[in-house]
Image 1 (cartoon, helix red, strand yellow):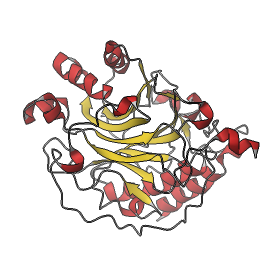
Image 2 (tube, one colour):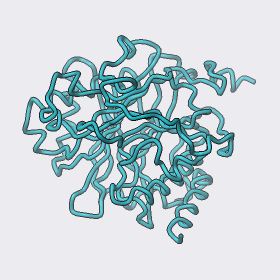
Image 3 (cartoon, helix red, strand yellow):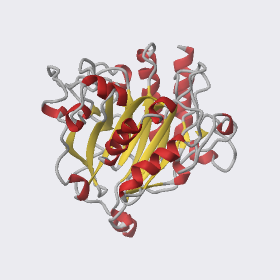
Length: 365
């Protein structure tokens, strides 16, 4: 209870955080690395600030009509059918939408990097999406991720990355990464930070960053904040409760950005999200399908606030690596024991009625 109260206090402080930006207060939220830079855990422990330099849509109250924590009752299907099809919608990446994905690349380190066929498969997977939140990077090699991003960019599209500090209570540390297509989206370098966790509620506190779509007028571009998370499988219930507070912290400290997308490896399915799933209008985009390579568990998801994120196109699913690349299960397991999960969103900022919203028109009123 004391730990939950402490995290609840963090949530309240997050709502007032921007007032402390120049005063050196609110040392609960730690700065993460800048776009395209390597970082170390030690280098980020003593630097703090609250993000929020872009103006987004107006915030709304968190107590809007609730879904009551109840999710659609569905029978689980393997990822080769229904929502989990391995085939992505044809041409969608070049249309008025972007694809956002999450991918736990199981123990992504030097062992995988030593296998060219694995690295080339991973690179091609990343190219299917415009922004990918990656979990479970485990390497002391500072050049692993920059080198991998260069491989992803080899076909001519230019990708960049944001990488967080090494996190974890044991000697086996992990890093979060965002990899993104620079022609499709850009990242606000002042928005990147790691959630502070002074009471050790989370094994690996999330990495947060705010993005904006390109190729449309900046006043109409979809802006969104991604919260990259990998829960501890031994402490899922407690960490889901903590993530409910993390969501509130990020939303309240985002200076009006209401499109907050939690994505990553939650180590649970869409029907068992605990306190996180009971937040008003919180909605998991992956439901009723397996997300692991062995096709017997759902771990991974993208979670939105449904009334706010009207930019969601209604299309999401699991990218079936075995089907796409004609791999056996053992071959696919060399790539990862997870499949990527993805969702599509409009490139335009939309209001709560789903209409294109212009910040220019809003300012002029």
